[in-house]
Image (cartoon, rainbow, N blue to C red):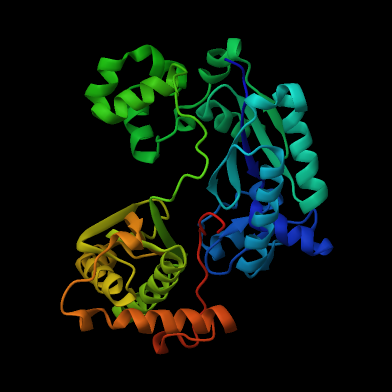
Amino acid sequence: MDASILHADLDAFYASVEQRDDPRLRGRPVIVGGGVVLACSYEAKARGVRTAMGGRQAMALCPHAVVVPPRMSAYSAASRAVFEVFRDTTPMVEGLSIDEAFLDVGGLRRIAGPPVGIAEKLRRDVRERVGLPITVGVARTKFLAKVASGVAKPDGLLLVPPDGELEFLHPLPVERLWGVGPVTAGKLRERGIVTVGRVANVGLAALVSMLGAHTGRHLHALATGKDPRRVEVGRRRRSMGAQAAIGRRPRSQAELEAILAALVDRVTRRMRAAHRVGHTVTIRLRFHDYRTRVTRSHTLVQATSHTPTVLDAARRLLVAARPLIEEHGITLVGVAVSNLDDDSAVQLALPLDAHAGTSLDAAVDAVRDRFGSRAVTRAAMVGRDLAPAVPLLPD
């Protein structure tokens, strides 16, 4: 098989948009966000600043950084423009997030040339049409293409030829494997497994014993170059969510519930716009060390996009997690609804007046669509500004 899968990933996306739109910021360290770093430029990263780091720590590392507030509408517009370039390149596009996608260009050789040439043109088009730097990895599989783009950053292009895959992959640290986070990496490193090559050589049985059947098989397959997944076009989201970094300041239960409510408002509004309903409500919390995260989930009897129903489930989960929050502090709150289905698949249950709240949801959605998302807000959120830390795919 040819190396014909591209992983295209915008570089320091939020910060790059800010530097594009304000020439005074170009070449300077830029931090997007205030109390918590939502994103930072490579000039700031060179000084040790990282996403999700506390604002005070970031400024201590890089005191000359320029801090700018997030402009989510500008980032969404830039994302849509970049995805237009992707789809002008090939119809085979699988979006992963607001700033990255897989592209399959295997069928374009006769009309557009080899994949590397297509990748070079893609990078030029994004730079000329959108004004942003982008890195592209080219490989035979999705996993290798993503790893290649990570190695090539920033503003680079890297081809992994089919006959050189293991030579490229095996010297890399275990953290490059999809699914290896701090906990799994710690287990592997405790046993002297520090490179992808060691993961491949240790054997499937040993990995399953260490990490469990699913994780062991998954990592062994990746470490030996096996990834049969194709680029999926038109794949529907399996979940919708939003999250907000909230800094290290202690938060009362009332404050956390207000933030949670604003996030639920955003998520359920997007679900209704997409005509989706969901069964499972999940909250996500990150603690003061900026590394430890927990999730708590509840599955509803009936799929819904009804804001009060989702919010009630999320609040119950938040109350149950309160002891952990009091012990460890909290720096991020997120909510997601998963196990999605089309809203046409849901039947109304009796009594019908139990669903009267859906008309209120529709009315609020109409006001926000016409006058902006800030036109109607909850009383608890008056005077508070909430920006999502990680927006999802562009609509």
